[in-house]
Length: 251
Image 1: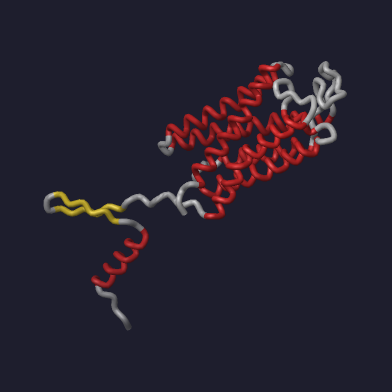
Image 2: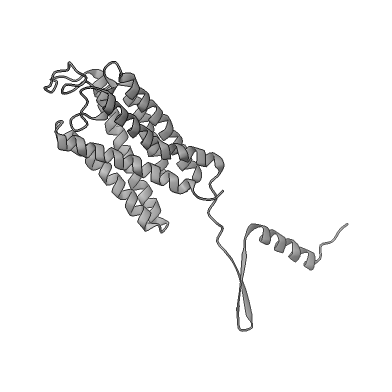
């Protein structure tokens, strides 16, 4: 039968403690106190970085595709037409593909945000819903409006098609969730002491909501379309900045 001496037990406990925490020794007079330093934040893995990179590039790719279509497609006016109407016409498949690619990248980004454990609980989920809404936006085309594509009456249509309604519904759900994701992350960042990043996140969500409300209330007026575009740009920028910040953490 083997026996364990007090010295052996103490050594085992010390070894376990050393493997799991970093001791900090503080000496005051003749008293020595040992405290345990807080564990470091878990590092971002390579797999998580790949997913987060999808969030970094999703917005720039989407915007670049829209700008490219503006250059080559007759009749498209970004001060009058939202990007969604580009899904109509002979080259409409380009914008549909743009929606699908953006959707896949955004859902991947949501998975990356969740796996890092640094974006709270709700922000990753809501970003994922926004990604799914982009897929729905590609599946259900917006109706032609105000002269685009060429041959469409310049005046506003009196009726909306079923797929136009579905597209609008996807937009309502998607942009609402995108904005709330910003607010949710802002709350999480504020709780963890990152107040500057929290304020930026809240500002992004506010711009998204303001842009969507503006385009809904303006009945297609230029100011509403431009405000909506600004809100979209703010949202994509927020996603890229957030994912880039998390992806830069060492692995």
